[in-house]
Picture 1 (cartoon, rainbow, N blue to C red):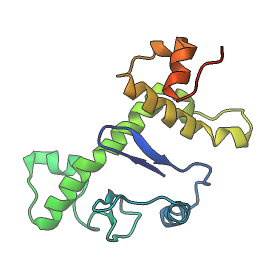
Picture 2 (picture 1 turned 30 degrees about the horizontal axis):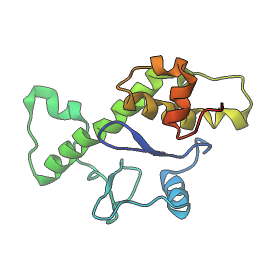
Picture 3 (picture 1 turned 180 degrees about the vertical axis):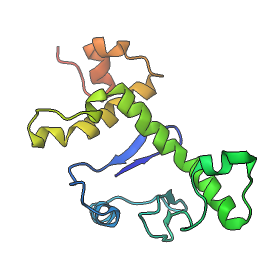
Length: 159
């Protein structure tokens, strides 16, 4: 499970769940471990989650995917389709963030021969690096300067 802001920065990531874990189980674990929705805000979630005061899912059984609205320039026909269309537009940010992450770190798309306890750390490490790269407008050259890396992490370089 990941949470990202509209600037495509990851603000939360939960790794190490088996693929058979339900969305609700992963979310419940995150909430039990301190994840909080900021006051006055809410998170957009996919249809695997329930609507709550803090989580907004699309209407079920209503056109949702952006391509469904693009066919023949069909416009939303009612308030539910309009809500789902706007929901899809906004949720597209997380899809874009995940796409950028996977493109920047191809190891996330392939199986590796690393031990499982290391494999589960890869998505979080990639998300952290992604956020650092974004804070530098995508410029990765600073990685070659160890003092700059330590400074960005709030650590003083040893003398």
